Image (tube, rainbow, N blue to C red):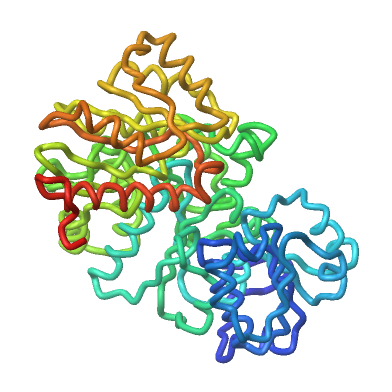
Length: 464
């Protein structure tokens, strides 16, 4: 991995020397653990850290509690210009828009702005694998990581993974190690800024997403391209050969290029992940790790025990023949439609709706009207459009109500649930409004379902 004009990849016997004594402003503490992990690492290295976030201390209580007693200056509920002027570095959280005027203030005063994953890659001398795309990133990244481990490779999982800050791996990962990064479009902005790409990468697919933050699809895809644009001789990127839009991007790849297709997965392998889209995810991981020399026995053994990751078509259990599936990270119409087609032969009781991402909800509405037997809608900015689409597609009689409480939505669907049905949380929309984020939404659903699964016939929760 290399960068122009700044050389990178030099071995770091003591990574803390990069940060010791430096005044560093961490912009965005957040609630998913990555901002917190970076902050704790920088403090451990002896940096003089200021953490600033637009959210208040009450909103960030879980993260703030873990900083109690540490030498960290907290500036919450807003930003102070001086923290972006009198600093040696700004560490920008991926959720902070590039257009933030405070980033402009830092750049105007010559203060470098870095991002977690790209800053790590500048100074890591081992192998980096990056995975991006609109859908399937987490599943594919996790599969690659486990396949590497199954063959005895020392591998680390980080990037856009909840609770997994990347920068601290400078102190953990050695030059013979591999770091597997899930990379969102926003995280890849840092790779563009530094003009670097992972050594080996995967581009799973591309669909409309985040158009509430981008000027259009071209703008969104441009950020994604950093996964391969700066690769060097010996590097390579694996593209989705089943999707013309993704396959066409391969022509721009400056180094090696490979293609994966769902048909690459041997027919006799027992893929336990539901849905045709998950077979594509398996094929993507399979293609990349084979290229890296991982033999098929290690790959197959991983695939055949892998049942998925939390909040992504996560099977929670069954009560009286009724199954429960948590697909809370379904924040796009494409994801919602894929979920509806992942349980052939079973009737679906769908929970959908939420916040607006400026996406066309009509395909999801049509799929819901066709595939779901009953639909409970969660209140949110996008829900009226979704509801109109369901009605226009002939599904008006399937809508059982609009809910501002997830437990009430589940309870309403349970009044009509029959053996063989699946209660599916796959909103097809973002979570903000009713929930802090999609993980909060998913964890709320999990708690509700666990109560149902542990109820005895009298309605009492066992163990309560």
